[in-house]
Amino acid sequence: MNLQEQIERIQSMMGMGSKNPYIYDNPKFVEEIENAIEKDGTSFICSFVASAVKMLEGDDVKIYGFSVDKNPDSEYFSDEEGDEGHHFAVMNDRYIIDPWIYNNYQDYESKINFNRSVFDLQNKDDKKIIKYLYGNKNNWVDITNSMKEFKDLFPRTYNELINYHRNII
Image (cartoon, rainbow, N blue to C red; front, side, top):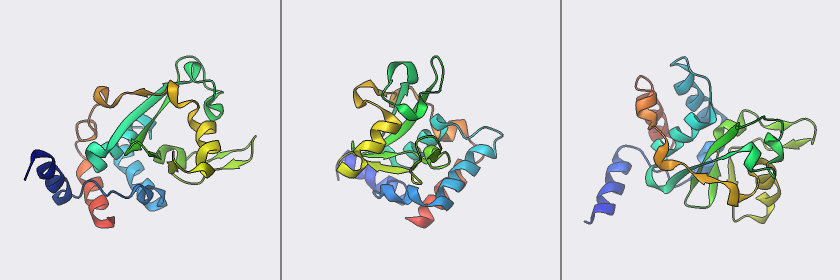
């Protein structure tokens, strides 16, 4: 067994790496992620959410971010000011997983509803909503290595989230 196979085996034993991004469209699961963050008295912030997805899915996930002023094609965040931005997870270079956006799912001005957490970069039907939410992919920055691990950020609640994830996969 090579090192990668050993890592995957350990992740599987820990309930990590579901290989199914669509579990994040489950509102109860989004609520559990939110609870794991807010129980520590912290706001449901997109960077913490992306860190939770990274913890649960392992090396299949990278965390990206953009600042609004450097990604003007992201219409959803166009009202943000200065260096405000957004962080989100991408699984297998294909699926944007963003439970934070699930909780903020309606733009009342444009009447666009996106009541979900997962967007497929290879699905032509998702292209318009991805551009609306996340702008130009060339303006995304890989911040995976600069993010703190979820278990270090939320030492009191991360195990509860891992156990919940393990039970639904």
